[in-house]
Image (cartoon, rainbow, N blue to C red; front, side, top):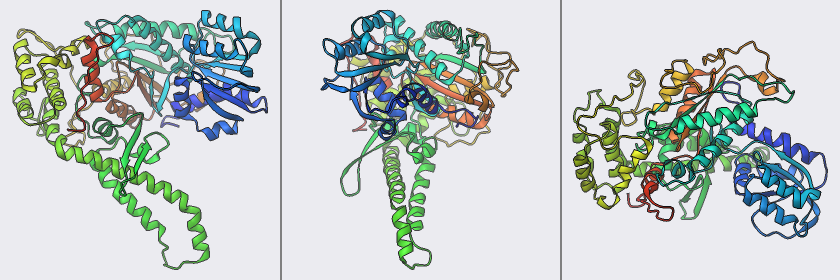
Length: 592
């Protein structure tokens, strides 16, 4: 449970699957086959182990899209997305001849009528169960979810996009299933932006779909709003956070090390290739991921020493009893030591990059982002801060990031100035790395007479920070103001009102809710759900946990179409102006 008495996202997803697929499984004692598509494979592996499935009499897990041998004596459970491709693959399993004894079909979301009718037409006599279980999002961490759709960025922001409306519709459907899984009917608000409409459009879509979904609850009564707010914001709202070099462990590792699918590959001391998955199962990762790299580097070696010391017997005597005790503990020791070795290696890798390059860059980046230096003296001429970075032999990629931070700091620059910067970085042929930010509503080129006010930030001068980590993501201000009920209504219009009691203080209205579940009874606070259109950063994810810890009466959940890394975002920005087939990327991690 999170600090507010809420089950976290992972637990809610597991409960949703248990109440449907697993509950139906338990009704019959026979062994079954489970058939998944790529999305449901990823979804299940994020919150279940194969041993959990075996315990429920699921003998094998198969890929819906691969050819499979018929097993006529067994029943098959299909857990899939309601897409044309998945439904067609299902139909092919039963037409012309059935592959399995019977089918139990579970969709992640509402199945469109045409697809459903097609299934009925060809497979009706084989289908024993057909249910929609409303989980079409990916539980990433305890307080983080994604829609598992990195392509949404291009669909929404590319000027050549053909499927923007469809993408926003799909994201809205996924957000409704998130609310359904959390059993929340939130009030919806969005960040107003005169240049961009996406947050407003998505807020309207979500609000209408939520109203339809919650029209009737299980007992046939209209469900009222719960103690939750959903805030929708666009990526351009804070362009600084995804570009800065972050020095907290998780954000730093994903920025500087090539971690694919949350898997860190490394060489052990004896030269063997190893890999470790960085997820909620690694308790040490969960404990360390939001700490500053300086703390992580100090803590891990201490932990390794403690474990090694704890294995030695205090009196030095070795008895059969002692040996038996140690043998029992060996797997636990091994697991603990392995975890710590992985993080010792990963922290070391991060620090290597830091001392080679990043440390020098960070001071300039922080001064540009915050607008003042370590002593709090205002940066009067940001160009003087930027120039040393451009003159130093940093990678092109790091220079692009520094130029962007300079442009964001002055709220857009002149055409002439931009041309000089582009020549300095030697990206004349690839100006889109910088120019395409305009597609996100971020000012890049402005006339000298143009003046735009920068949003005022919360005063954090009393907070303890590291000199090279003074920037705080803008979303943290929003989270804290939302929880204190201080968000400006003009800047954050209500698409639909939250209950009057929503003030983030944990006040719950006396209105009777529909059939209270055990989840309802445990609640002592309210939920704030934040959705960022166009990708969320690891530093913003960290803020959700920090605010929840500080406030205690409100759980903050954050999500997006996908999770961003600086390299990935810079490449995605560049390819916005390309047609579907022309994609060029820049990845200079290895020679950074």
